[in-house]
Image 1 (cartoon, rainbow, N blue to C red):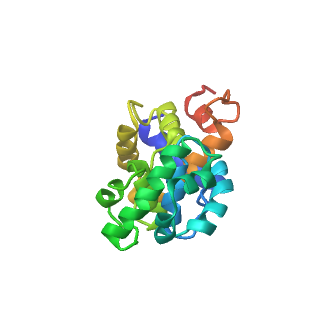
Image 2 (cartoon, helix red, strand yellow):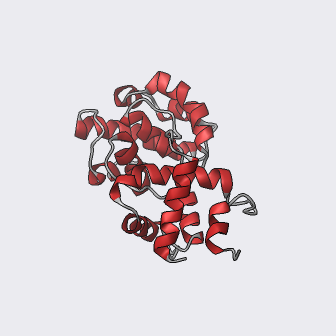
Image 3 (cartoon, rainbow, N blue to C red):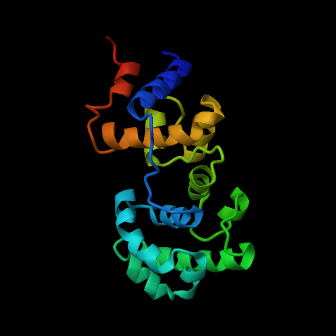
Length: 207
């Protein structure tokens, strides 16, 4: 199979599996999405979704988040890893949104990535899932699977993102990156043996 054929196979099979893809992190607007994504670093979406209802009930806007002390934020997110750093980032993020953007989440990568706790991946998720701009956020599942499928060299996530954007058309990016994440979790987990990973088998196993 050529690289182009493998890419086509991925898109075709994932569309069959996941014709509709819900956004994994519960949120109500771009701000709560950005907070949820920032909290998801080095933990699971499931864990974040367990914590955010209480957090958002108290601090679902930058105005309300900024009024809280760091220790109060930490108490609300203490079940999530890196809670000290994340609490500090969430408070400062809210303050800067108020200082620089009148409490409105900006719609550029440069402005988003200037906020504490917002790296390129978080900004990409906000741009794609929050605002609908074409983006291809690369998480560990996508990086691992694209390397496995020989669609990228696997050197780093920056290269993986660039390769993904060059392989697939812009109009499918926002949906496809989620489809790959769902596939990775369900069919090809990092610690699994790959028995269910039929896409990789279709590509490389000799029949």
